[in-house]
Length: 468
Image (cartoon, helix red, strand yellow):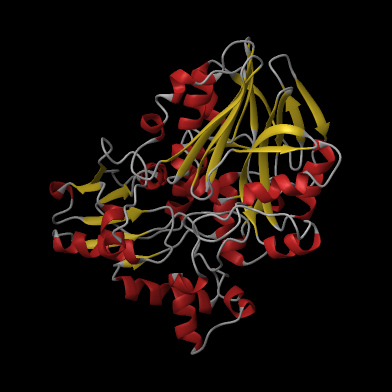
């Protein structure tokens, strides 16, 4: 995944840029960058690897040395960005969030075969560099951005820094958000709506699907009006969004609380306590506890001093252990207890199974698991989520293949998505047995959509039901 932030100010914008980017640290763990423009000194840029340290520590010197009245930056799980481009549009910097599924086709049909690209360490082309090459096929930024939005299969939101201002363009179906903030000194653009609040900005507007604007310190100009169709990612509310974030006017914390309430209404378990796997499961659990009357407790505490992000060293043999090391158990709240745990989702199931086995070893009588979303049946086609994985690694897919006695087709997999069907019940029971839970009940898709509270047609639910 990834997130970005941009600022335009009558004064130096680096302070706002530095902290605005840092507030996106929950969305990326590998690369981060800042690019600024100053009329006197021109462009400046810095990119660092943040796998072993938080953003702030890696960019502390740049927060002092860099200066500019215009700036953009990002945190990403993938390519290094922002990148600088020099073309017939002049010099500019660009950063993107999204996923491009049809890179080979674009290279074949759109880009001059004599054009060269720098390869990343994995041998792939930097997607942001490709987006810049697409934009440069047109005579101006507006047409170039529209062209990129049109031909990219997947999703694409971007910020472009030029000497005259910052272009902000939301994905054509609004799969990822962009929101603008305003204060006396200028304007900002952000993936996360909360990222600018403590910097003194107030809400200005949220861009609609496919909307393109350009802004400087004096104002915002709409260059392309938003489209009518939206498919924003529902998983942003369930897991990826920070609790204080809001998308389409719906706060993440409120949606998760609603999820927990609706989970409780359909449940018949009788645990002693309800707990959430921190951080994303906590609000779900509070909603469940308040609705059910079962006490909320914290048998796991997240160790934050040295685990502020999803740090993953290169010890792949210890991957699952490392991923849960920041969760410290409280034995007095586990021994002899019937526990109901709510996590945002079950993907592979490995960590959840190990957590459950640990709880039994620590004296728990029962461990009931309640994921806050339906079984994940399909890998995401539209966003580069770090939780996206090979479909064959998904625990639900593995169980379906076992039940079918062969590798199930997508149509067969879709038949397991109906929570009222016999197939669904068999799948859930099989997952429960494999992962050694006392009981397992997933959140229903219709209830999860109701917890969001916006038009279901505006939500992408592909990973749960395979519907595009």
